Image (cartoon, rainbow, N blue to C red; front, side):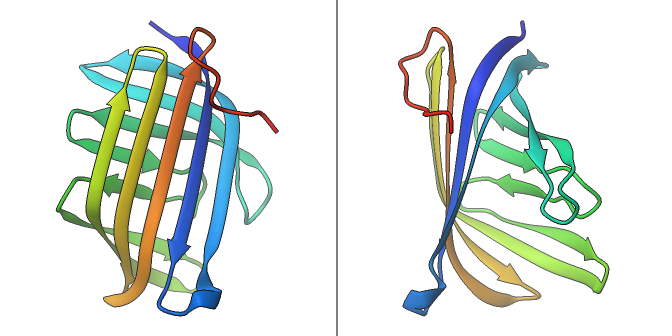
Length: 150
């Protein structure tokens, strides 16, 4: 079954210095569907490097969340509580090894409203880059309004 949904993904980071705090939010309309016991949200996301849109997906199962971003420089971030995952991010200047250690993963997956909160540590080429947070909200038309479309 596929449904239309609204999705908000807010990413925040804090590094050791106070002036390194940052926040990014994507709010979009998307699709929800279930396949092979896993849940998916897909939506169009504009790529920063060329401004073109691509399809991003969030895959959720009982103990993990995978966020796939579009584009030739896109990334696939895997979050599992207490586990460190590694991805290799290809750039025009070379390959970066990115480590993601999930500190906490909290999921409240009600039928019409989802709330997912992730806290993780990020390292690039084994250099600590700070603590990061991702808050994902998903609601369909039957859900209690929590997402404000910009």
